[in-house]
Image 1 (tube, protein in one colour):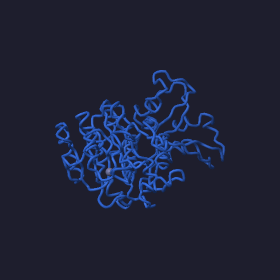
Image 2 (cartoon, rainbow, N blue to C red):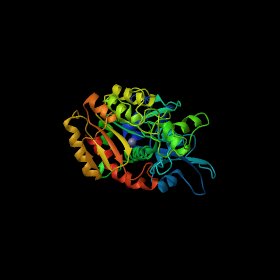
Image 3 (tube, rainbow, N blue to C red):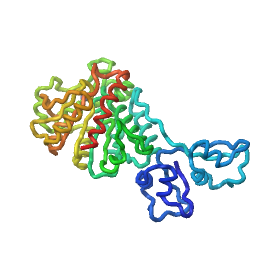
Image 4 (cartoon, rainbow, N blue to C red):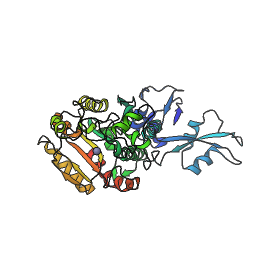
Length: 395
Ligand SMILES: [Zn+2]
């Protein structure tokens, strides 16, 4: 919600007026110097939208404020052009409205267009989040990263490395929305206040690593790539088993962590709906973008969300640091998922992350069933992993 600064106003005053933490207001207005406000400047109050109501017989700003449990001065601030002592019946009055429900509806077929719309809606309501474009998919879709928090400890989550595991994107976006609601409204998640996380953690979320693949599974092929992808799919137009990117390379088999072993033993020797590791490590733009992001940011820990199995993997070749085990025990305790240290697999993102940085990396396998998991599992998965999201921020 945009407001125009009045002479003598200060950001700390707006923080009290709207009961929004001051640092969220400051971070929502990066171009404003909080110590040198200029009257007439516009600033954004996060976590609010503006409503317009019509003045009725007998209305006053005091009455309107009282009925909504908001301060009169918030109405005066929003309606600087009207005379509060002379309201005319039928005139429009702007009223601030606190956002208390989720903008993201995760329980739907969550394709790239839905993701992009939701990211824009969240950015408009909560401008203290930052949106970065970390690379492009084969079909030129922007791979989007959302950053939230002003801390020094960088934690990274990602989803939909695998196309038919797109429910991980909607779970991550729903979690992000819940985190934002708790920050602006001062509410808790599982009993935990979240503002301390905002102050200590810089959270990076790439909700959809493989947008072309997700759109293929959900919407079918484009006219431009139809023949090619049906060819890779062995003539079938059923793409529910598709995990790869649009060129038939499995992005989670692309990383230089004993990639040669997977290359040798994986069945597909050419592009396929799943498991083909490519002609060399990191040939695919989506896998490259994720490697470059990790190289640049030096994350403290990473969680890659996949489906399915209600289990997670936390080691790689003995290279994981001691804190991996501490985190794994905590994740298992909270979620009831099974913690598995080693599995006979290489070339995955978390394998490479552990090998490269010797920091905790996890592959989380959400839910149970046959991929793509049905949306009827959404609530159960969300319940299971909400604690994992929080525990990852405690470290
Ligand atoms: Zn997967």
